[in-house]
Length: 597
Image (cartoon, rainbow, N blue to C red):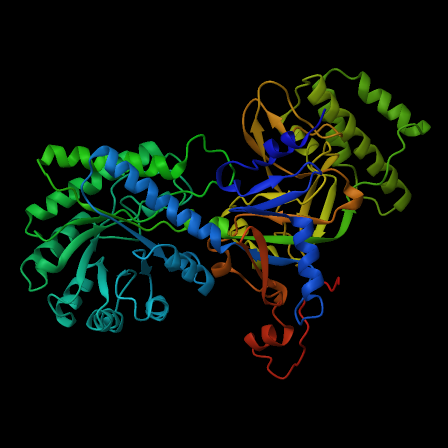
């Protein structure tokens, strides 16, 4: 028997960073914010009814959850405070938000409103201007000026400090150190040395650390900069060391233990070299967002506990009674949950023709396949079908495709039900979806990280979860690009029994792995998908491929136990998109997405 509990399990709903999602008894996906919830079908209906007459309304839209930013900010703060207290760690904790992760005003504002002490980190002059506009008269927050710096950037940091803001400038080259001495005023702001972490890490961005990283001072430059600054009027202004091991760390306990030890040892080494004003370690980022809902332990807790333990161990060896203050720059962990894309399905296309297995020709072919026990023979048949001579004869091609479809159905069933072992290449092909759902969106504009770095984003049907999935589909976008598709699915570990679709495609296994194909209950009545956890970087990285611009923006909030929906703006008009590429005379207020009102 299938139930909504099985659906929650296969999609990772209710755990990890999908803890704000649930499935109701009717099988509808719903969003939970504090004391309220709303099903996504109801959300879609309300957005349509309240905004369908507005410019830029389209059936697909981005929904934002600023309250989830607050939740993550509070969680990080609480995790640090709690562990520092229990471990007797007497340094202060200073959280920072790197605005590069999502520079949207609603996102930055949500961070600032969530914690009066939360600082901001800039990586460029433009981001420095953004931060100054965001904090305005608020002088209580630390502002970190990071990134490669010229004189103008340093003068911007100096001006901010002269206005009464607390500013820390991170230096990562000998030239920057010399330039800082030339144009900064002693005692007006703080300095940090961005060091290169000589530590191996895991994950896609492991190259952010280590000897060959593009970031930070190599050991010889670190020594030179320390000597230059120690002998300069700015020597007492060096208050921190700063590094970044890499985003989305995958082996947190090992990575953070090594990294915390390294940073603490560098901290005390530089103090001994004359930088006696050092008091803080900026760990940077690295706290992973749980995109796949696979972490067995809370990654924020593991990150904090392991790192603080490692630093505290070094402090004990050094005989230091005062522990360094700790700064972090969590980005994905703060913002990933804060937005999702609700994608309307506008078409479903079948890869194969419909097969009547009882027809004489198909029946004979099917019986032949069922009787073959030698996997090498099955592989040879598949190879013959795959490499059959090209033909433009439509009738011949139609018959051949029906044979391929039937072969795929029968062998897949035997592989799953009889544990028939076949070559890996054939095994992989057997489970490729037979349907392609076309969504009213652009992968390049809405979740570009999937194309760039193969970042996994959960793609979940919005309804039908009370029934066993019938099959799987690929989700493709409107662009004229074969990379315009987002169809991965995590096969979760389950040992008591294997869950499968009605057409025998595994949804669980004895070992977790990834496959292609999103489970759906009725391929003929597909309506919408939710693409979750798009709040980090996707707004920043978006590309207007095929001139598909921004989707409509909707903000969902809980207010007094009820859900409030605010329409922010419609989809980007074609005239604005064309303006960006130099065609200024075309006036067209409509957007390029499908009009399905």
